[in-house]
View 1 (cartoon, rainbow, N blue to C red):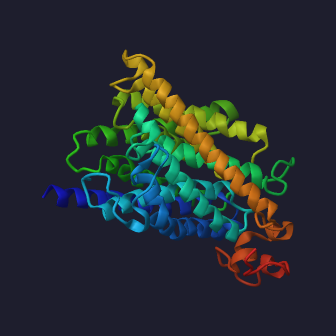
View 2: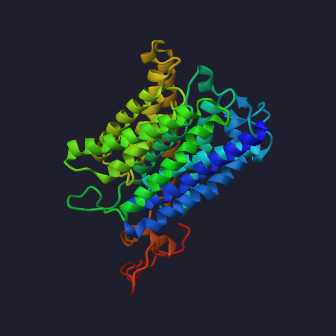
Length: 416
């Protein structure tokens, strides 16, 4: 009976996490320009199709197989047996749940590279990203992982998923370069549909309850209530504070900060949702709301073009949430009277995962750039990737489309 109940619980939670890909698709399609809305949804679809296959063949084993020196798993490839001990659910159910996390990690990068990356190059990145995610995931969550051995706590992935994905996005955007004219005075890049982006945000928020509460892997876990309360209140606090902070800083109640504020609060509470009291979850959300606004400004100052704010939401707040466990955890937190040991471990773990994600992605994108297959041509970028790469428009317009009339001769269904 316990196996049956846990199976239903984990499958439903995994389905919620998987449904977050719909949230990514709507969020990012709403934030990019109209001429690129379809191309970004195609990238999210690639995350799911390519990512799930790669995770089944190699990623799951790398992440949860028997450990080699605490660095990576050596069993469970091709969905073979992990041989790592009993689980609360069957291994295929566990794979499904964890696959949804892996796909989410690489989806973080899709928005940061929107509007100027070639589609085949992105397919290659998804393979690399899934494998790299699985290796660092083993360090924290795998049986015998070296960070797990030090006592690192990351309940549902502020570091494993979000710091990895956010710093990967930072590296990708840095190597890829800014969109044409992005930092030129007077140039505007208008979102295609902000209500669509808000809808995607609500879907992500909805799915996050599966993301965090489902990480118990047991329907009988006594802390599910604490987890969902922390998840809800951190997101709400961060969304509210980000809007008010943007009003104070920029004299406007910024809708994009409402979106990214909520997501930042969700990211920041993901590590500690089962470890910190609810009042601390609210404080973490407040800090996340401020950090997402300020780190968005940092990217502008650095000249890095991140169209959807992937790094401010996931990278910066993934670090915040991981470190906050070392401050507020009821067992081991510095502010709870238990000394600095856990905080030190959390700092080390957050740094290790962030550096790994940044480094692997930087090298992968640098190789793609050296091969000349990373970025679309200037003409294709001006026309828009929807038509240049996919031969379709996201939205129908009566009469001949200007983009179609201007389609460059080199564009179309090409591999590179």
